[in-house]
Image (cartoon, rainbow, N blue to C red):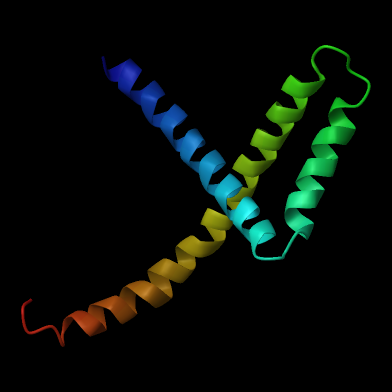
Length: 100
């Protein structure tokens, strides 16, 4: 069971990075910043170009991989922001909470 749970942890983390990156890229396109989403789409189409039966599958795999890498990079950039900026600010604000 421990090996299964470790595998589940790895797969779950990869899925969260993929979904998070995908949500950010799609949301940016929805609010008018189309460049990142368009780049991902064009790269996926370029990689899958010329494949007959597997074109759609390869396009999806490339898009998912780029979304996951984007989610990982964004998370790595935002972790120090949360640890060094938001965390200390939150701790200071908690001092003013009369219910704490």
